Amino acid sequence: MSPEARGRGPSEGGPDSGEAQLSPEAASARDTAVNRVRQAIGLIDDFVAGRGPTNASQVRRLPPTPEQAEARRAAARAAIALEEQRSAELGALIARIEHPKVKHVTVGSGVAATLSHATQRAGQGAAPGPVRDLPEAIAISESPDWWRILGDRDIGQPVTHYESVGYRHQPGDFNPDHTGRARASDVAYANAMTALDSGMVTLKGRVTAIERLSGEEQWPVRTAWRLQVDDEKWIYADLVAYAGGLGSPTKHNAFVRAPELERQLRSTGRLTDAQQQLVPTVGEGETVLIIGGGGTAGWAAQEAVRNGRKATIITRDPSLGGVPPHVRRELDSHGVHVLEGQVIRAESGGSGVVLGVLRKDKSSFEVSGAGVSLAIGQTPNLPRGLEERVFRMKRRQLNGKERVVALEAIDQITNEPTGLTIHGAAMATPAFKQGPKPYVQDRDEFVAALDRQANDLDVPEDSRGVEPSIHQSAINVPLSNEVPE
Ligand SMILES: Cc1cc2nc3c(=O)[nH]c(=O)nc-3n(C[C@H](O)[C@H](O)[C@H](O)COP(=O)(O)OP(=O)(O)OC[C@H]3O[C@@H](n4cnc5c(N)ncnc54)[C@H](O)[C@@H]3O)c2cc1C
Image (cartoon, rainbow, N blue to C red; front, side, top):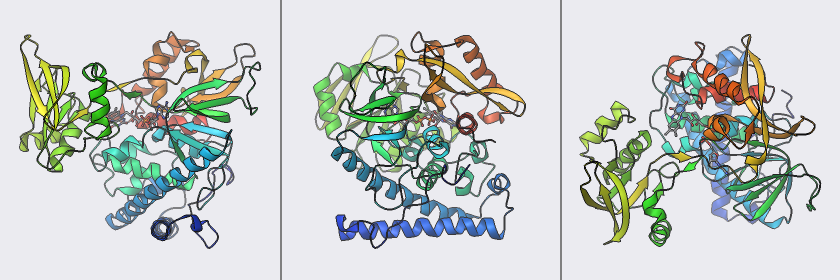
């Protein structure tokens, strides 16, 4: 890949870099963050130059020492702080532009979005320093990277499963242990440093509609695509990579039926979706009610008890089959209650919330707590307009085998690509696999291909069988953007 295509380097402050707009504290925080990031990048460079082989793919496989890993982790934390600041700057800038126009938009901020932005060749990311000009390539995401939210918890595979030619910094750069299970933060840090390195700045907001110019509309800016953010502002773009993942947090009927309670609890931070914030804001010693019984519910309960809160899980399946044994043991040792039943009602009570629960045997009970964490999965929720598009498989070769690396929207008349691509876990969601809309050409073949490549014997065992896995995105996204393995 050319240096131009790789975007610009890490953010830097400087005498003329716009600090006049920042408070002295903010400017000093920025300097500290930038210096830490520089230091760590220097460390990585030293490491590569001094000890490691020069071949990038071999360097990736060399575990860092614990000290190197810790220095890089500190740098990545600084990168995250910097990214949040630059994201706010981008938001303020876009608010001032009547019809913002960019060359490339990536929707999302997870693994797929990060790899997609870092490997796309259509436009430069943000220049170093404060975001004062609209970059050619931006990202839009409604919530931070999910792995960042999970923090230092163990996830499903060793870091080596997540290696990708699309990463500027591999998850394995942040963990000296390349054989045990990775931490979510290893992935979050690889994402954050890769985002920083590739100039990825993210506008906070939900993309609620994606429209293609058909030629009949009167758009104020002439581009192929436009994306509406939070049902308000339109962003105009030549190309769009949609990496929206498995969907938005599923809504719970008990709260859908009590909209005023939901509004009030959310506004005070007492009701959260675990995928966006593991636990609500409740006082020390207070109880968090966690609805759901999968891995995310286990992590939410773990987060609550680790922070001196109590946790009660309410789930239809109290076996907690999706919660890893080591998390289960931690919950047991903290006396986390697991109650069987389906939450059918939510009311306010005292300073918190009371849930009405129906058991399988039709008996019922109530349970109260200071706040609620919803951990009931995600529902694919595509932006309006996407379902009207026609998609076809984007295929590439790897190790002599053909694989599906993305879906691309095509023009129904010319059959040519239109510049909208679906990357990562999103491609494996029911909307694309089952339809009826959006329409995917050769859908049966597409479904079979995803299954085949997730179960291929080349896939390391712990990642095998999972179509939306990090391992799959790590291979597919760079290939889709023509970066060879
Ligand atoms: C609980 C759980 C545990 C998992 N554990 C593992 C594991 O251990 N190993 C593994 O390989 N895989 C695991 N997965 C699978 C996981 O989905 C993938 O690994 C991977 O993280 C998906 O990456 P992604 O970037 O495609 O999507 P995501 O990481 O889900 O990112 C999607 C992004 O898009 C944003 N977004 C979505 N819609 C919009 C919109 N309309 N507008 C703006 N932004 C939007 C979201 O806010 C988010 O930032 C797990 C999934 C879940 C739910």
